[in-house]
Length: 133
Length: 431
Image (cartoon, rainbow over all chains, first blue to last red; front, side, top):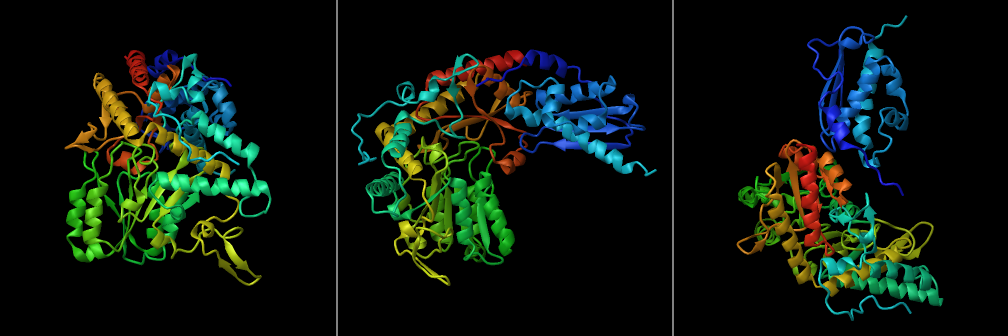
């Protein structure tokens, strides 16, 4: 059996400079994911067009993993490597692996997936507001 | 013939490091460090005697009970009855007051279902703010279904039940008359508070003797002596084997004889019937049989009985004293961390009465409970992080999540010292 472990120092460093962490003054849409089991919370919002990564912001509270996971997801989006839609639709295992959390224990999966839950809600919200062609 | 589960020929053994040697899993390494298991409130570890008893049952006596005339059937039936008797005696009850379930959760759900007949619209179901979801959600559902009122007895900021609040409410005799169920824990799984059973007993006798009192004993039975038949006001008491050194998947609801004989079985089918036709069935007159539908978990009961014998060998008084020592030591060690706040009672005794047992729960300021738990795990120390199935209690006090270290007979002072070392690492990492 494999014992899971990861470098907390690295995560703590990242937690000091979370990508995209800010509350938007005006947002077109925002979505929240909350883990009632532990109080972890992520609110992600977009202003204007979702294609413009400068107009993305998120804030939250919770364990280091949940916050860093969201930061890494937003980082991938900001760099153009992944779209919000793709991030939302990834299999949970793929999502974790993409964000570099393949080595965490199962007890921490919900912490990582909180980010995906918030992104999925936001994508759904934006899709429902897109007028049909 | 299967060795009697009641044979206790060993001399008393000292809890702590001596006892720990009897638990094979405690030799396990976690992240290359010897495991320090401080999550016994979630589930306890099992001594070799329990593992041996289960294996011995399956290798020498496994057969269905009361269903054959062959030797193995006899062995298994004897083992089943003997195990039931051992467990019931350990809990201060008669064997036919023991209704076997999968765990305390199932026991409490059945208690709520059984109470449905006596709860009517506008009646009151009393619960406490300390309750585990298993002793809250079933009552919520019953209240909703029967249009009854679910009333929550609050706790004080100290972690104690606000008995004065209850006393004040009961002064309204018309209100008191409407109380049909009192559902409380024996010991809080979240913050270790020992509930004042005597005080509640006095109030019940005086103001609402008509009510059923259902006690969640999941955290009480592993640490404190249970005298079910000596507690006249307690109607039902739920326990889980796996929290008291027994296997997972078996538990019980103790039900006062006078109540049980008037209840309908909640599970029907094989084994509990007297006679069956296509149109009808009558149930067994013997209570042990009537409330044992289907093939029972004989191996689980045999293992649980072995656990009861093992705890008796240690001695319940010695066990309780050991637990109190561990709680006191943990409180003292945690006091050295300025960023740690213990939740629940800050002492083990007040005026000679035990007020806290089994665990110490705390908040580490500025560090999420999951992060504390993860770093402790990296040091080989297992604790629980989260809400411990007590969301309403956590919400009431604004606790996002807490960390709980919980103890059993195999926990030693060395384990508490390792917890302290682990918390020092938390302090370093999050400096």
